[in-house]
Length: 278
Image (cartoon, rainbow, N blue to C red):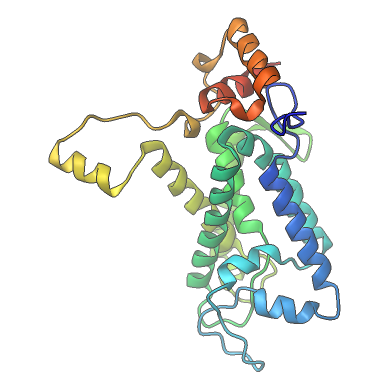
């Protein structure tokens, strides 16, 4: 079998794409290590401690913590719901963007969430753990990429993704302003969640517009012509993106002969959209 012949659902959709599979594996492994005799030390060293914290044990912020805190969790329910949400909302995003882009986005959102959390918890005593900031970034991406998709709230009430995400962002903002999200001892780091969404939004806007120092210079100098952002970041719910049956058949033939990874980003997009219509 060709190494590119990965299992996927209709439309080229892999059930558990590589990045999500790896993220879940690492999180579960670390969680198991947290429940060993060395778990307390691991959690203490890897948790995100506030800047200027004043606690009897002398724990403090370290440069690696904005990365390591994402792989630590406070209990089974914490890791289960985080990983479940990562799979539910992230699988389609990774299939649409590709593993490399998704991995970078996930880590950027998690680190960005840590940055906002640090700004809102200066001088407090309580550390933060969990992948929730990065997960909220993934949720934001789903809402931006597939705004017209329906999400079933409590598995019963259908809500369009764009409204679902906007509602969650509003709730996190209000909850953070309520005081408990400002580092007063809450079990929920609301501003970390909001930070993941804000950083995710900025990241996607930058990618859509292909912003860079070089392009900014050309724009100021008047050189070059404006290009539209890469279709990869535009979203997959536009009706005019639909491919014909002949195009889909040609793409499927290409997968059979050369593997799914041989497809271009445009072909993957068309195949994913076709899968969503079936």
